[in-house]
Structure formats: structure tokens, C-alpha cells
Image (cartoon, rainbow over all chains, first blue to last red; front, side):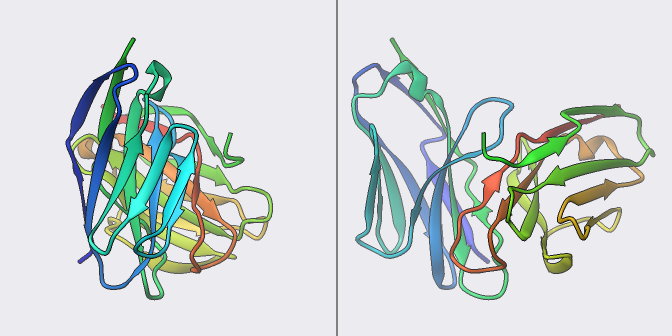
Length: 111
Length: 114
């Protein structure tokens, strides 16, 4: 069974203090790994898709990387508006294109 | 705004009742997925429809059912509701039926069963 584990569960940073969020996964053939951002009471907002080990993608202060067992979301010089829950999900090879999600990391950035 | 719409935003009902949640996918998307999000379980896949046909099922209870109509909107029907069914229900849509593609999520329906 596909599994996604995210750590830490919660992270509090000072504005400008860079850090990384971890997503470990086990899947029977990875088709894609996805990062989403979710604000309280809202739907997940797509950030990145990574397809193969070694791949990196960047958007503003966020950079996502992928290895064969885990993915990292690096946040450089975060701002208070980066406060949200960050969700990692995997899509396995095969006929079922469902996403299997981790429980998320709640990031709080203090001004 | 992802382009996926869901109605209603909030729903309050009693145990034993039946409700219908509605989802309209992004323009041009053929796939609709339904997910349930609760505090302890996180986001859980329920069911996937592609162009009107059921493609895959997750841990969807027998009391729950879904369909996708010819205009591609989808409805999730929840019956004999229990307290534990209280959760956020999201639908997501994607362009095709199973390739590597992004799923875009709607704003969700918050269901409270009293």
C-alpha cells in the first residue's frame, strides 16, 4: 500500500528563517509526486509536480526536490503569508490515478 | 481560483439523513475525483470518474455513491449519515483519465452531522 509521511507535523519559523519540509514515501512505482498548499477551510492549491529522482522545481521562495525515497520543500526567507499547511501526495503507476496524501505540515511564520 | 466549483459551501444535517454534494470541473476537464478530509485521517481518496464512467474506488463507504453526468458535473450522495461523516469533502478535476497530470481542487463542502 502506498504511504506518505510528512515531518515535522508543525513548524514555526521567524520571518526570513529558511527551512525544509520533508516528505517520505513508499509507492509501487512512482508516477508523480505533488506538493499542495492549503489554507484553513480552503481547498488544496497546486504548487509543484515532480516526476523523477534528481528533479527540482522552483517558485518564488519555494523549491521542491525529489529523491527515490523522499521529497523536500525548501522555503527560503519565508514571509508571514507563507503560513499554511503544505501537503505532499504521490500518484502510483497503474490504472488508478488517485493521489495518496500525507497528513501535512503546518507552517507558521512569525513577523 | 482553480476553476473547480463546489456547492454548497456548508451543510448541516442530522444523523440518518441523506445529502448531495455537487461539483463542476474546470472547463475541458474530463476527470472528477472526490476526497474526504477529516482532522485525524487527512485527505482520503473516495472515487474517480472519467467522462461519465467510474474509473476507481478508494475507501468509499457503501452508504456513499457518486455519478458524473453528460455535462461532466458530478454529484456525491451520502446517505444514512453518521456523526463520523462530518468532514470536508473536496472534488478535484484533471484533463484526462490517468496520465501524469495535476489534479486541481475545488473549495470544498463542509459537512456537519448533528
